[in-house]
Image (cartoon, rainbow, N blue to C red):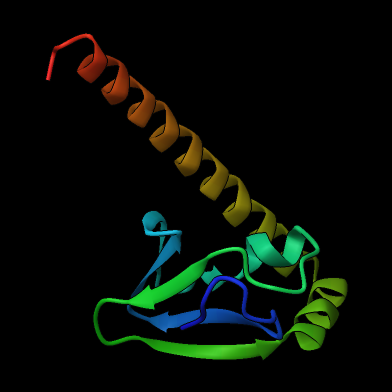
Length: 113
């Protein structure tokens, strides 16, 4: 879909399917139907993607020009609220997975694995 370091010209929206988002080679998030891709890079005010996105199966995506996305955010409170809720859910997901990873590493280092 896009590679880490590519210019961020578009926000993508998943109409159907599932997309894996990777940082280096590690999956950090999985996007599903009716979710946006590229939000973290956009809201970090980067002009490039800070991760990569790949498909594992058939997917249908629309590309939204960054300028059109900005205009839609400015004009629609419900879209803005939906985006904020999505980002908060992703932060929760990342935090939970990071905590789980740390627990597994600790168990392994203590010889429990």
